[in-house]
Amino acid sequence: MANTFSKEERVAFEDVLEGFQDALVLSRNVSTYSVAGEKLERAGDTIWRPQPYIAESVNGPAGTDISASFKDVKQLAVPASIGFNKTVPISLTANELRDQLQEGRLGDAAKQKLASDINVAIMNTASNEGTIVVKRTAAASGFDDVAECEAAFNEIGVPSYDRYLALSTRDYNGMASNLAGRGTLAGKALTAYERAAIGEIASFDAYKLDYANRLTAAAGTSVTVNGANQYHEPLSSESTTAGEVNVDNRTQNLTIAVGGGTVKVGDCFTIAGVNAVHQITKQDTGQLKTFRITAIVSGGGGSGVVKISPAIISDGGSTDAGAQYKNVTATPANGAAITFLNTVDANVNPFWQKDSLEILPARYVHDENAGVAIMRATTDQGFEVCMSKQYDIDTNSYKIRFDTRFGVVNKQPEMSGIMLFSQT
Figure 1 (cartoon, one colour):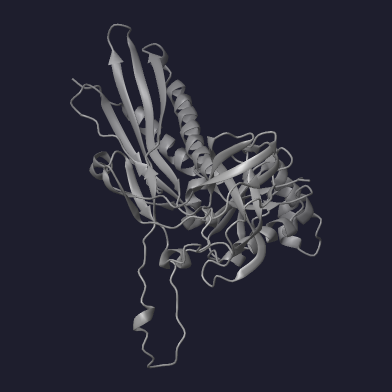
Figure 2 (cartoon, helix red, strand yellow):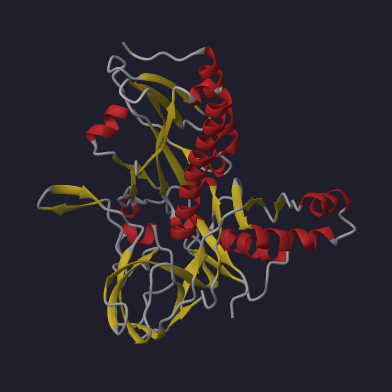
């Protein structure tokens, strides 16, 4: 016979769920996509999520024949996987269960850890895959810093709503200190002084992280583009020995020459002569496009190949898709200088537009007649928390586990980025 839960345990589980939901700070600020469990299982826990279309317009007076202007449109998509299976396992003896507070305290610890796992997964995705890099040469000081993030977003046409910024505690407090000294902003300045809170600033809702990723300084020197015509042509799918498969257009391989040292994953850089364009109007922003190294394909020192994001879409092939998704003014020239932006070890402060990051809640399916007691509940964001308990007659103890499954995907790296302070 399956174990059953007492009323005290049910109350404890409800308290855990409530606290778990309260702790999911970052997950409230990204989009959520729910998909049926059987579809995920049949797709190997990976599905493809569509990226936004970018349309083109043509010129011509009313009534003009535009039959020659119709173009094909390619739908781009990115793979999203259920890559996180987080569990908190707990073992309690029958003697320990005499103190119901014991189980409650362990439930609180499980709640904190699972919520932290979800928040960290979102932060890591935003920090590691965001491609808009804002380099600041001084410590965090306030409005001017966030205004640079706003300018970087506005210039390439990122939607002006649902923008978020997550700052390390020290960087956040540096901004709060600046705000606290502004006597003309009585209410907001007082809040900054009393609670070290800055709220909304330069169109971003700002949040404080009690943990933040660190990015070490780039070590490669005299790095250049090695080879001409290195651009990416957007594809919806391609033919392989397995048939037609979808293509992830967020990255491309780039051959480089490294004069000294080595390059590494996470490095941020610009390429001489390659400016960013507004994604819709295709106008030159006058600002160099920023890129990130996401993988070392070969080499790292000397001559090598790195995977970068975003892909360089310069319409070098003069195709419909190249024109629609163009994101830079020109294809890099052979020998074009690469300049790294992460010149000093620093905390990574991610910022993003809500639709760029997406969480995919998932669930386990248990056999209710397998001798294990199961309780489930779902948060507002769609995360399912499963609590299961089983009695071991041999040891007179109970095994209790809290589980949650989910995935995180950065659908559009050009709608998310990072800010680095105190760079040279």
